[in-house]
Length: 162
Image 1 (cartoon, rainbow, N blue to C red):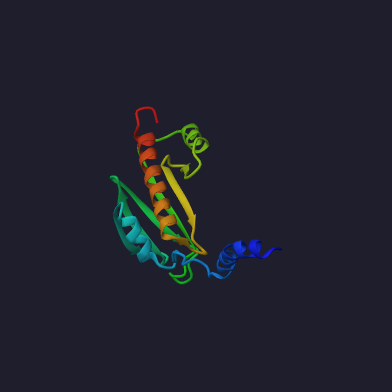
Image 2: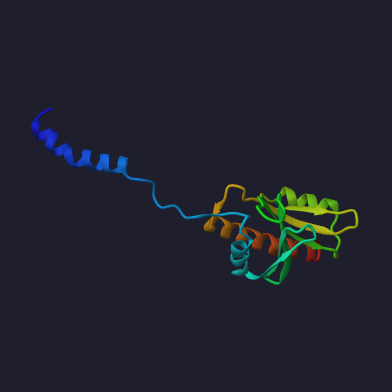
């Protein structure tokens, strides 16, 4: 290679080496279900959220978003701590939806699952695995998805035709 070509490539080579030697970018810290206070605080940005303890000794968040009450159950906990998963839930006793309406809801949506219990109560749920952590932005987006599910299912369940 000529000296001219080598001189022209030196800045490019220096840039390539500096990129290769650079450490990882500072990553946003991850949050998980082991810290229910942080999760409660993020949920509370959308309405209200109260941290409680359920009958099994596990954390439980009771909240309200856009006028809709709901609960966030913590799952796969060890002695009321070190939880791995969350289950967002909201149930309606009246009006009763049919199994056909529940199935239609589930077939038309990617997130959230609607169920119908033997007593006729319908429930919308969203399960979230936080075992290895997610960014705060990711969990905030999950809460936004839950907010939309609540609003849409409430309109569906309480609407004139379901």
